[in-house]
Image (cartoon, rainbow, N blue to C red):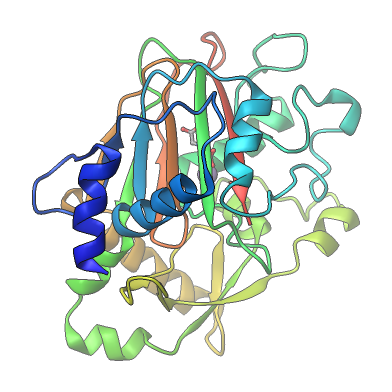
Amino acid sequence: IKYYLINLDKIMNIHPINKNNDFVAFVNNIDISKNISKTQAEQLDKIINKYAVIVFRNQKITDDQQIKFTEMFGKIEESGSKSNITKPKDRRLSTKLADVSNIDKNLKVFNRDDPRRIFNLGNRLWHSDSSFKKIPAKYSLLSAKSISIEGGNTEFADMRAAYDKLDNKVKSKIDNLICEHSLIYSRQRLGFDMTDKNNTIEINNFTPVEQPLVRTIPMTKRKLIYLSSHIGKIKGWIRPDSMCFINDLIEYSTSAEFVYVHKWKKNDLIMWDNRQTMHRVKDFDDTKEFRDMRRTTVL
Ligand code: OGA
Ligand code: MN
């Protein structure tokens, strides 16, 4: 696998951000507005298995082109069917895209107390997309249509490197742990309790799902810590102990040595592997500035 991946770096014009490192690479000779071949998709699949985060610059693409490109990597996760926060009639984009912007369908920025804005603030917490679903997200592809002047960076943490550097005692402690993930847990961290209005739709749709804390990537055989702010409990533990333990692990695995900070340019498209990374967006002046970001997600 290693030998094959080294050769691929040349074929695909891959530029890792650090030599001798396998976290984050820029991919230069792909035009996402054009159809890519099955072979190219397979090569990119290997690249993302290796680097976990890949960045494509200058991709002026339509939503349909983004959808088509995404579908080369698997089935798309449809957006919006579970949460009641955005009504179907208020959607700005197709359900094949997750709208992680701060604007409504009339292109007005959300008011500070708009539930949609508050819901989106969950993206400020370290997470892995859809880890609260039975079938979570594999890859996410985020296209920057319009970026903020200041702030709004997206940060990525390498959960394989974090696993590798754990001491053996912790490794054996976490090896067989199961975590319970729910969107309700991550929103509770923000003081936004979806259960306090007896919102039965949300309570039923966001029943916690179980995910192993340590996973292995089949293609590379690398182990990683599968963390997310959606975790609210470790199976068999009480909640306060779970939260303390998970918070410590999140703090450790998002320390600077494991993190890449992306400063967006308009028309960047980043594809990341949710199995191997966590990410979060940083603050910007979101009640004034426009930030139009569109995500497609592979199941
Ligand atoms: C996402 C997400 C971060 C951002 O799209 O899944 O967390 O930078 N977005 O908007
Ligand atoms: Mn996300």
